[in-house]
Image 1 (cartoon, rainbow, N blue to C red):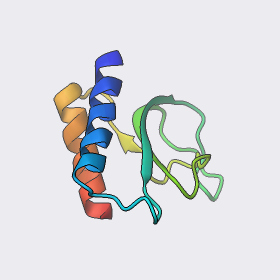
Image 2 (image 1 turned 90 degrees about the horizontal axis):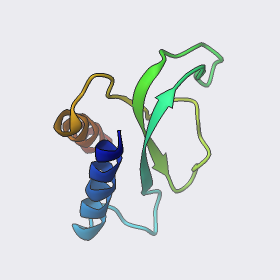
Image 3 (image 1 turned 180 degrees about the horizontal axis):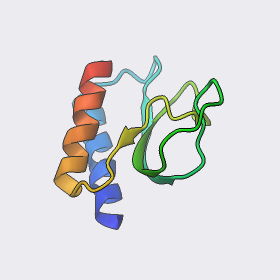
Image 4 (image 1 turned 90 degrees about the vertical axis):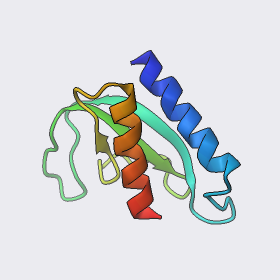
Length: 92
């Protein structure tokens, strides 16, 4: 889990270095690897437990409804990076 978080920190650093995000607008401030348990969506429905990457945005850093969470259960470090990058690519 430690290697995955380090790789995610490097991905965020790369996004910032490439000017892929504009800090004047809503931007990603963290990619946090979490072991999600008991999470509910914005309508109160339970979400699947497991290992996820939570994309944390500047305008709502305390958001915990799982909307932007990326499931990485069973992924190796490279698979985790690929899944998260493809999700971010779709958002931008």
